[in-house]
Amino acid sequence: MIREVPWSTHDELTQVHDWIYSDSPNTKRQGVDRILAWKSRGRLPSAIETTLQLAQLQLRDCEGCPLSGEELRLQYSMVIVRLVNGSVDSMQNKAHPLPVSIMADRIGMPAWFVDIRHAATHEYLPTLPFLRDAANQALAWLDETYWAAALQTNRILVTDGRKLQEIQQALEAYRKQCTSVSLKNPKKKKEVMPKVRESAIKKMVQVLSPLDIREGLIPALLDNGILIPLEKSRQLAFDDTAIAKELVELWVPLLEALNAKYTDFGTGLFEAMIKRMDASEEYTLTDKFAYLMSAEANSTTPESDNTRSKKYMLSIAYWLKQLIYHDFDDEEAEPILGGVDLDDIIEGCLRSPNYFTRIILQAIADIESEDVSTSLKPFINVIGRHLTSSDNNSQNSNDFNDPMDLDMNEELQELSSRLKFVIGQEPEAEVSNAWRLYDSTEWAPCPLGCLPGGVMPCLDLPE
Image 1 (tube, rainbow, N blue to C red):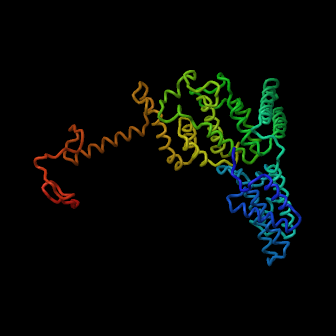
Image 2: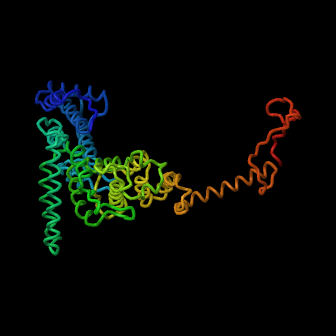
Image 3: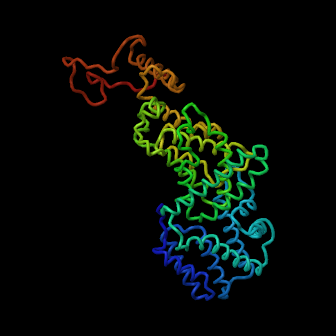
């Protein structure tokens, strides 16, 4: 996946890191100036922007700038508040937000950063020595959690077959361990399973780095028979309504653990799922709905490309539906994937309207407020009408009639009757068109807007 970054080379990123984390004020100033130049080119990653703010403040503090102690306390406090909020907000589920302390613990942020945020917002500002120490610790934490991963050059690229194989093997090991416990010790499953899962997840995390999530882990989850079985006997049929319970119990704990460990896992997985439902030409809106219901053997999709099959896309849609119902409908349940915005899911579905994204839009309409549901209903109906448009004359076309279509037909009939009344014809009279050709022998040129004969029409409304 290609990302646009403000630095030109990896060496430049490394050089700036060394400058920023230098003990020399002059060298640190070079790093600050270079990041400011980056900022003029476009948006910076939030971790680099916070690093810049901390470095600028430390320089002003050590250079004897004309700021009072109170002003320095305010500035240090604001940077720490922004660090905590910026790190935590990206993980929050806006429908069911969790306490900041819990979210901070999930990403390994020191708890006292959250305490500083609370004190600076609701209580007295912390002392200046305490805030200076917090700034140093914040820079160290950013170095460990962001810069260390960004500067790695000896890691195997996720496009490398060996790396993908390692990820795949870790996922297979997790599945085998959890499945064997369910088969061997069904009675002790509740007691043993958490320990087995924890052990398998730790081994998987050792294989992964934060940069492997979107390009390695998520494709492995979606494309290699993990979340969606490749065996036809285990795939969903069009008369199914949900993902199998055993699949949910197997993979949801892993998704929760990965979401807690990696801040962009949830949003990345949702985006990838929606892209997988970006149907090719054979799934466009003008196709017959019967095509989607036909046997898989009649599909024009190559057998080798399982990720383009109808059942695969249906499984993706039902996984999304499962996650949406859990994370956005159940107020008491802790979200499986935090930091996901429902508006982004709606936008992604509307950009690729088809049978499968319609399932997701309908699920969102079912759980959201009346205003959102009302706003989505026209889009859902339009997609449904397009899917059935080329099959309206078939034997089963009446099975797909939309109540909205019936209402529109009644409106059209009413408007037609009114039009006939206006032009002076009885509603029963059969006319093909409200216009008629004027007798050429009686017609004579007249100013635009006049009636035949040069009569100016009276446009006054009746009293």
